[in-house]
Every structure is written in structure tokens, then in C-alpha cells.
Amino acid sequence: MFQYSDYKIYLACGKTDMRKSINGLCDIVQNQFQLDPREKAMFAFCNQRRNRIKLLIWEDNGFWV
Picture 1 (cartoon, helix red, strand yellow):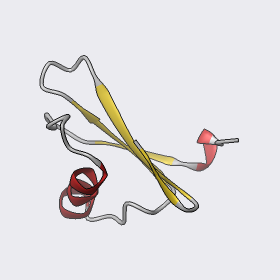
Picture 2 (cartoon, rainbow, N blue to C red; picture 1 turned 90 degrees about the horizontal axis):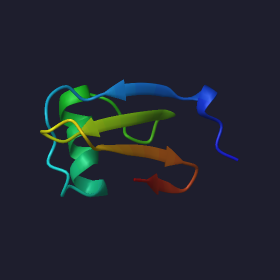
Picture 3 (cartoon, rainbow, N blue to C red; picture 1 turned 60 degrees about the horizontal axis):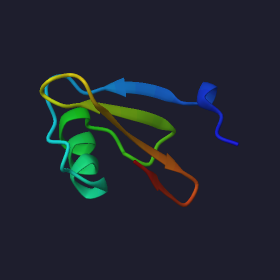
């Protein structure tokens, strides 16, 4: 079971292209946050209209989007 209490949460400021997949979101985390996307954290991105979000989460052996 996924335990949310163990994770830090990072919110990306501004708009993100929602067509980005795992590789594109990992690039944002590495270049803008200066963090490793595989650390125990949830990275949240929103679209221009601010009505959708996309989460990037690393868990043991792979990413969740």
C-alpha cells in the first residue's frame, strides 16, 4: 500500500505542458528543482488553466504518473 505520509510534496510553479510524460517531467524535476526524481517525493504539475494536475512519484522500481 502506498503510504503518503512518508513523502515530501513539491509543487511546480507556473504552467506545465500536460503532454509531457515521465522523461519530460523528470527533466523538469532535475533542471528546475535541482532534485533527483527518484527520491521519496511527489512532484505536482498543473496545466495553464489550473484545472488539471499530474503527479510524478517514484516507488521502489518505477515511476507513477
